[in-house]
Length: 178
Image (tube, rainbow, N blue to C red):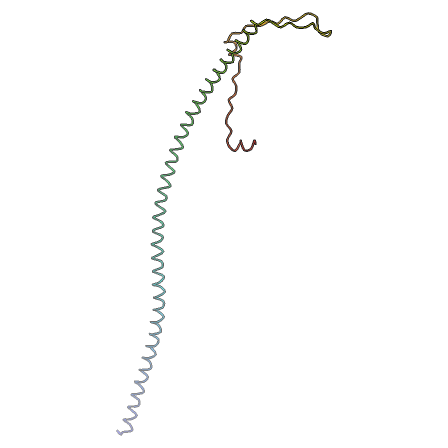
């Protein structure tokens, strides 16, 4: 073998090594690009994971707050229902009481009116009747006799109608009537 053959063999070996190096460099460059793109995807995925974790924490805090508000609202609704029931019972009692008081007032007013009527009748009977002048030509010439009936207080009470009590108007009704 000659030296020229050795040089050819060495050139072939160098070319072979260069091709292997080029292939390795190409694969390394492709792998580097892949690593860079995967790193970008990883960074995006990591940011998304952190965002979702913070959203989850926020949602959990909101859910806890909403659960507490729900409990508070339930308690308030229950208390309001109890208050409404108490107010309805109290209103029923007050309406009954007012009705009784109105009846008693009507009886008292009727008794007062009867007593006043009895007194005025007694005074009318006790007082002399005023004399009338002679009748005109169109009327009969005989004077009419005025008769006074004595009424008992009991009879007057039955006939007397109680006065209506004036109910208070609500502010809205008062404003509309003015």
